[in-house]
Amino acid sequence: MEFRDKIAVVTGASRGIGAATARAFAQQGGIVFANYPDHDADQHREMIHAWVSDAELDAERVIPIAADVSDAIRVQAMYAEIGDRCGRVDILINNAGINRDHTVIKMTDDEWRQVLAVNLDGTFFNCRAALPLLSDGGRIVNISSVVAHTGNMGVANYAASKAGILGLTKTLALELAGRNITVNAVCPGFVNTEMAQTVPPDILERLRQRVPLKRLADVEEVVACTLFLASAAASYVTGHSLNVNGGMHMM
Ligand code: NAD
Image (cartoon, rainbow, N blue to C red; front, side, top):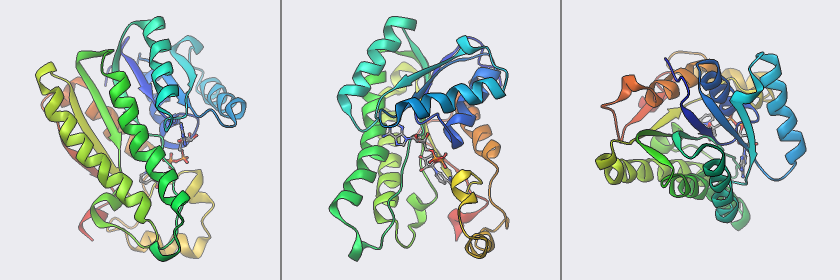
């Protein structure tokens, strides 16, 4: 896939799936605004510098940019800066996400609100603020999750946020079709990120057994699907949610 001189914004790009997605855009000729949160900003910016350096990327192709995605004013300011620097956005990847797991009976108001604020409000704020800059024929890809379809124990806040993203995706796909902008979602299952590596081996094994393909996804397998939806090849795909979860959406 070719993204020569396309301007992409990837939220939550300091590590994990977001970092790998931003890196892939830059490797394929794009210019990427790599968003990171305002809290622990120095640490997140350093993480971005580290993956840029490890991948031996041209530093001018990856522009770290801070904004807490749950803060509408900070998100607006981020796009004002992007507009000043580049004048447009071609691709928006809403990747930033958090989880605060508890069963519903134990879930606090804060746990509910924080997850909805980052995952769902953050996706909405980025879409809304990016729209005036988004070029006709542009792309939005929202990172949802298999639990948007299936639910899961202890993740009511997360599953609700990810299901909300699917409703937002389809509505925005209709609203933007006239500008030939496609809006799609990716629904990963268990991905082998830093987060998975902290799970105790016996629990990880039980999770693996629940996946029809009997393994976790490599980050690159999620990135490939995101890049496909962001590419010219997916020009007739919109309002779709692509399951990248080894068949878990059928369980
Ligand atoms: P991660 O925790 O490694 O990365 C999340 C990124 O989001 C980090 O860079 C973090 O700094 C950023 N972030 C968090 N809060 C933010 C905020 N308020 N503003 C800006 N950035 C913020 O997680 P990951 O595994 O790479 O997950 C990436 C996306 O994929 C998330 O939306 C997650 O829900 C989704 N997902 C992950 C899995 C999985 O198994 N890892 C499965 C399904 C879906």
